Image (cartoon, rainbow, N blue to C red):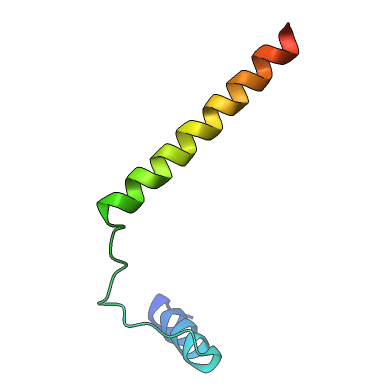
Length: 58
């Protein structure tokens, strides 16, 4: 079985399962406010984790 055959089988399986997406379309990046929000949430979680570690050590 060649790579082309495997690609056709995979595409047929995706179409049959209803998950077909046009390969030319790519996911758009998140807008800047969403990135900043995710960055802030991540930073807050790291701060909470650091605080918990410090409290456990004292």
